[in-house]
Length: 362
Image (tube, rainbow, N blue to C red):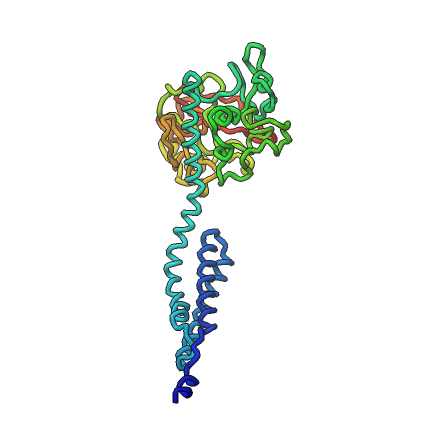
């Protein structure tokens, strides 16, 4: 009798169908989520079809477990695979949220970069008589390529005369002083949304062996490729100091009226602010924004008091001053787009510019 009972014991095995159904449902759901984050519709579709397939396989496996007379286990796994489609409505809700986070990530990173650069500017100014970074010397003019960015001395680098005056310098070379003297890394000058721009590496330009980042004077011979941000023009009669108006814009995303590695200058005639006296539409007002973020819905702006904002309009300076244009008579809101000879109208006129590529220099 004892032997007969032992021979009658049932060998329980896990249902391979239930295991496969659960595995397929998990992988398919992951594919849907990843497809939503990276905006890959084919991957999301494959995930959706996979979840449905897992559901059907789960039903078949569950019936097999129930009919096995206790010889198969895996009821829980099969059930999970069956109810997985219930999770789909939740995915439909959460994926747009994930997409929004994906779109906002470069914007938030950009704001962090600007805030860090602003802190470095204040550190630099503290060591340079309250003056914000300005490359070259007295009377230096704006150019789109520093004369000798690998030079061993400042006069040679910017073509200054024996008295340290004159010469030419890029806007980026002024910001490079934050790398040279305040320890800002090259990646801090690059926005992930700025096409055609990448962190500066001297080795990409065959710099003499032994040269360090701090031995150089600019972001290489093509500085526009390694700096994503516009800066209040530091050359001429109205550079910023720590005693300038706190509401002055100091740094922002690229100027929409100047060419960049990934975009041509916008057509200024299409820009009409949605304030008096212009009374443009919202679309016409948004046309004045930088190219980079959320389909031109705004730009990151850093002010002299070191607060940083994502601004929905470009006329956010003092008295609705447009940060990307020069005042045109009494018109601060629209103004006129800059070229490489343009100067701010006065000390309250924010004028933020970046270096244009050589082929498109004004």
